[in-house]
Length: 381
Length: 233
Image 1 (cartoon, rainbow over the protein chains, first blue to last red):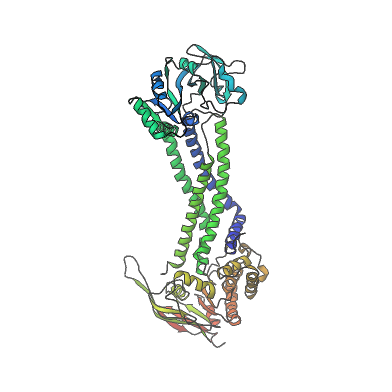
Image 2 (image 1 turned 90 degrees about the horizontal axis):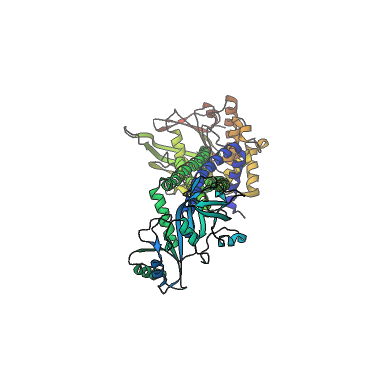
């Protein structure tokens, strides 16, 4: 039930919507385009973040152990079995799983080459890798020289229904399963495989690996365990939570590659330009009736009365325009991702963008209402 | 003939950049009575609109006092002055300032909502006001479907609806042709007499001298009485 004092402003605004169809359509289109600009940029940024942090955030681990001097997930010095035994000695550590993460050259069946990022782990380890793998393919890695890759990269890796085999460093590898929706920002597809095979593909010794994924005894203190592990490593180990590892990796890509910084700048610029366009589009619509609103104040309309009309107008414009933009942006983001791009639009980002635009609209409406009061009464003071 | 509004000793100066302040009103006295139509004339820039804005409690004077039905308005806040305008004052301007997305009757209803009238009672009052200004047959027309004179009648209906006692009109016939202007002037006289309201018309249009009960001229910031043909009526 709408309160009686709000009925007229709402009815009034609905009438404006219906009466000025083309003007309203142009304004909504302007605001929707501005919102779309923000959302598309945001989807590129969050897609980038998702891609560079996918493994650290998806793998089941309380702590990640890396060789000291860690900068980002994709490239790190190798640890050795000695590090494994030091870590597993800690009383709070219940499980330590070695993980290999190495770039390797994939020789396509047709002779071409592609770079892949090999992710290798003991198959018996409970670390939830790889994800998005159909249940019927869960046993795919159990056979010798097999690997799993995302379906989107089949063409890139030269795979066909008849030929699913290729070579890495002269060693045969056969794709025995395909995941869905696992993207790589570096354009090198993630190739999940068995631990020993990964060491071979990654050209590292049999006692070497890239990370240790540590699970703690339930109830143990994370900070004191971390401090203990660092001490056990005599300064040779970096110990991080998954979130810290993801943040460091994101920060590395952001700072040291133009791509990450470009995306962050893009979203900031899109937010600035998009907000300005949205605000100006609404302002233009409000200005169409500026003299009439001044007249309302002169004949005695209170500030809340004028503000209610303008705020209702802003809410209707911003909500409808950003709603259209959210639908379009989600469709666009999914299409790009389905084609192999690294876009991702979390629901909260869509909601936050709508909230920002609605807030801008309400602020613009209140500001305009204030200006109307000044225009009506201030000039002759 | 009871007093509706009185302005006593009103002065107003405007600061102008680079020059000395411009005095537009000097110690002006003006009274409006219920059932009387007053016209205020004067050359452009003489301060007519400023005096009307002060009398109608939109603007504040630098000196002097305004009383509305015996109540001094100087101490009122902008919010209270807006409430006073909504309850007691009606306004019509050179441009009718109607919302083109609303029909004639809906424009009147907006004015009524501002003075607190909503629902079926407001609709009845709006129809009465449109009838008073002889435009009730176009109640459901949009402003774009009305002539200039018809729009001004709707604006007058909006100004009168809700039993507002004091009517302020700023150049209400300036954008109308001669015939429409004559009709509006006659209508205003009729409304004042039938409705019993007080009206102040600010205009260059000398036609109003033939219908006004009293006339004033504003020159060099001072007010002088004018002869009106309608004074004896």
